[in-house]
Image (cartoon, rainbow, N blue to C red; front, side):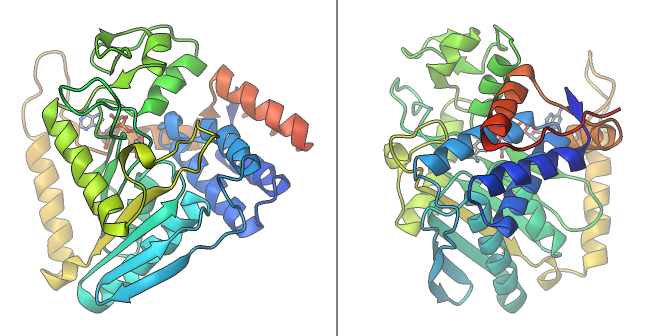
Length: 347
Ligand SMILES: NC(=O)c1ccc[n+]([C@@H]2O[C@H](COP(=O)([O-])OP(=O)(O)OC[C@H]3O[C@@H](n4cnc5c(N)ncnc54)[C@H](O)[C@@H]3O)[C@@H](O)[C@H]2O)c1
């Protein structure tokens, strides 16, 4: 099923409002999830919404909660999410980080007791849209064994960096080969196998079976270096914020305990270092230098981070957003139980 972006965002907002989410927050969550589908990152799009609705019912997401600032000291801000929607915490903390960077050149907000915030890129882009370099990271449910281990202790702990200026380089990556939701997406799309290198079984043996991977472990990005990056995320998010660490974190698919994730938002004002036009010119030149490399055998071009998603976004804005059978079935069931009309498909 393929739908226009606007119809899906409005549908998602109605599902959230009927679940007791105030309309401003419902709009933020709906728009940010649908934006992920628009960029082709379906793993962090509307397939998450039925899970969020269940987390509201379980009391793990408190839709009316706003969270509060615990402390502000120079360029540093500490926030308690009080189990609010992760998207709400992310928007508030991104905006605090921008405000602090306008005053100090750098601004950093760290939140604890938050919830899943979807794709990290939506928040780094929010900072970039305000004219700053935006960096966000967060810890997540432990699905990854530390290198040489076979019991999960780390999350897929994503890192995203976005830049002001013309849309170009935009990094948004899990610190595992892929995000867990890509394996869930393979399952919802009826794909029985996943590429080698994505996951291991529960004993730490590599697997290409989607079903085995869902119950197993994700592969740290580049072996022990991925474990190192995931630890860096835990430190800058959870250790600094005083929040839940490692196995203390719940999960989007876990109803038994609150998620309690920690998130970090860093805003850097590039104009404290060089004029904005120089920054944009130098970035344009740097990207061109990457692309000037002759493509290796089997490829017809060199891409930089963000290229695949900008291209899909252009196409999906025009042709609509396809939802997998599994994602659509879960959304339709939620709509029926909440008495929300279904969106009209793209013509
Ligand atoms: N909220 C959470 O707890 C959480 C946890 C983990 C991941 N995530 C999200 O999962 C999503 C998917 O993460 P992922 O690691 O699977 O993404 P991915 O592997 O698809 O892409 C990672 C990065 O590589 C770039 N890229 C892809 N192909 C490229 C190429 N050929 N050349 C150059 N660059 C290329 C992409 O533009 C992107 O910036 C992200 O949005 C991330 O924020 C969220």
